[in-house]
Image (cartoon, rainbow, N blue to C red; front, side, top):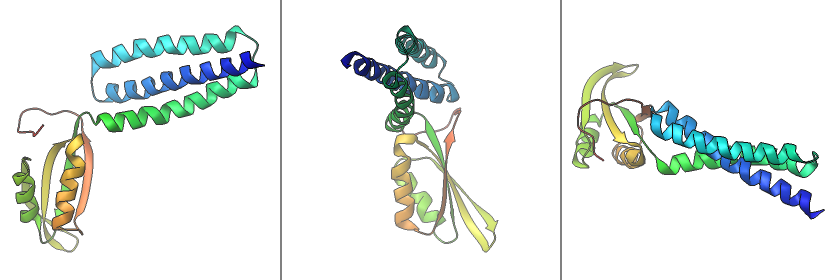
Length: 170
């Protein structure tokens, strides 16, 4: 009885590792990180083969099938958490403020960020749009700066896929 349970745990661990790596690999592919994506893909393929061969080498049982399915789901979650913690890349921060745009831009500049600001017309009249590219790991801090000055500002944060030239605080 212990062998099927151990096989299920092994398959779970392999699928957890496989899907964690797969999630990271896909995120790096989307960011254009070719070498890193290829390296992770090679490791992931090895782990996948180990997991599948463990499932198919013996009789199918509830433990290996359950380990396979649960490892798949848990691996996606673990991969996403790992990617969030790594926070690789840049974010594009846009702030729309009817009254405090200049103060927001000045505060972001004072914290070392390059900022572009311009006047625009919104639904309720004139406002200032503040654009800023920040390292993903600093996006939360930049958002906090904005919210301290204007808690009602409309903020969007998007992934900046490709950057060329300019000033970026690292």
